[in-house]
Length: 76
Length: 239
Image (tube, rainbow over all chains, first blue to last red; front, top):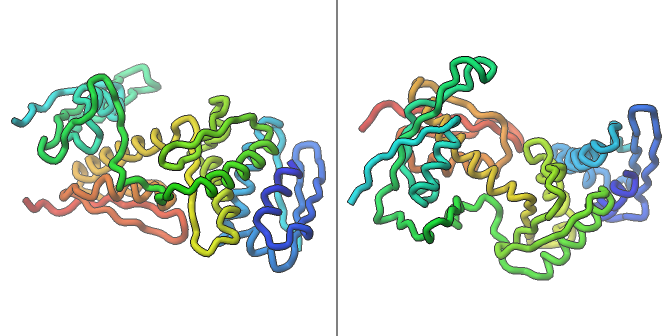
């Protein structure tokens, strides 16, 4: 799951080396915390959050098999 | 010579239209369709189920030749009505896209093959579970959006690719077209505007185009942002 976010986000941003994803595992929910370079935050979020919601949709499809919720948060 | 209207009956209007298209071996656009009754599932699908009934005939022969070979049923749209942005042949772009898709799907643990169609649509040949399509095609649209974003990150002129799986795009388009017809019937019958649920621009375009030549109704998009509602307004009786 973490790798999936990394692949997508690194391909979207200008500074792929600054992309850091940490996965916090809970009983029902996994939280993915995403950190990117300050200048890249807008690219990851997209116009009206379109890009980040697309990433979340893809994550939800992937996690459907695991019967676990996955939450993606962008930290600044 | 004009063909006579023929009656079709099925569980739903959609199914009746499909039956009509098969009988006349005509595309949806080339049929004149009148809905007699919309049919209903009845109470819990048990009591009072009514069949949907439509009348259909091929539209005027001059502008709509039925060119398909007998037995072949292709509800394909006119090329100029394709809602996806036309992508000229560009093998490099397609190859790049294939690389991105393979990488993402690999990380999603979805084993798949990719097939490129003549119109540069990339089809994901999956296990048929519908996982890639998602609810109302959300997952497929998201995937397509992300792939296009990545493709166009460093491009001056944006180029777009279309993703498909399990024939979803085609199916979805015929569904939207019959929905448009059905709702325009409703608008005319009740004399009131009918608003559809929120849709993305491509889906809205299909609705607008489906009713473009119908002088009895107007269509307009209402709302803000990417997802707007299409409203079908009956025109005042003017013949």
